[in-house]
Length: 369
Image 1 (tube, rainbow, N blue to C red):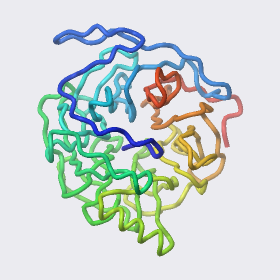
Image 2 (image 1 turned 135 degrees about the vertical axis):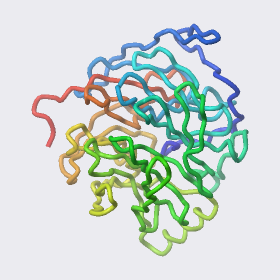
Image 3 (image 1 turned 120 degrees about the vertical axis):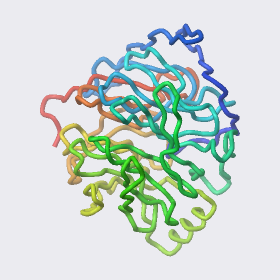
């Protein structure tokens, strides 16, 4: 998914193969080869006691939504190499080596995730509609997300055996898996609104979990599989509802207001966790299943100043995790809970550059509430 607050980008053309950028540290790549390890040790900002051994894994372009393989040794993430390409899916080892293209290079992709024990990845793509990048949305209506006609595909980690996982008219994206690897949770417009669904990997047992008017999305299971955390905005006033429906009819949504919610894995027991204002998104459960880490700009809702925060799933104990003055988002803990991966503007070579960072996770003395 796009970032909640971002300047409009120029129209893009499709990536045709793995076009590596060599910013800072040169890559050694040849046919059948892999780039050299290139992780660079970075210093955490003041006020970031949760981080030790912070490392930068990517350099240049736009890199986001990095998610761990089940064994914690690899990441799948989306990358835009330059203004002439649009998002494609890549794999990289957690030491920064082995970056390689896994998607087809056609259309636009989003929301990669590992499955089948790490031997395959799933992601959403528009290439069935057009091999070119889809057009950018009309930003004259303010900052909006385009709801492209994504369908969900799966392939081997080398990009082979590409298969359609599931399809419906409109938007199918933001797909992740349950800890046992048997259930997909995803966001779709298949019933006319932006709602969260689950289904088996073979497409059976489709269940709609949310029904309130508005955007429900970005779902992740808890580590024990009993809960789902997600972001949501439900327009309340007639004016808000009219604006939401008008944009939805244009395959757009305005993401400037979102809060964090949790529900049971069957869709019951929905409850709002945050009431912070601004855009609160990209939630993920802490390994203790009691806390949730997420990204927010609630201190300045009209800015791109997003930091990571943690909060108890009951809504108490809000704790700031990052203090960088621009964008930090898309956090995910490693399967053993020892590391956190996230995307950030810190140390960018150019303004707005977003890269992937990984840190050893440390619980400060005294912990959090």
